[in-house]
Length: 113
Image (tube, rainbow, N blue to C red):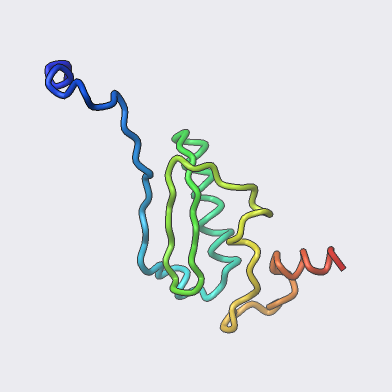
């Protein structure tokens, strides 16, 4: 309000804070035990949905070591094939029949060879 602007004239007109939310434990990731499922079922669709439907860029950063997930609002996500979340090997407990064959990291390594 304008009356507060007169009192707090020394404050900047706008203040921005990094907007993040952290899920301390993602049950979906923990139960799926698969980085590919995390990226293809949650991360990529959620980033696209929030960006396209709400005009709000968000970069979702899963932590595969402790199964947490950080959502950074207002941050443009990198292209999917350059995203660190994609470039991980399969988990040891990955239930996939093609474990270690089709994950993005294995494919990239084969293309480099």
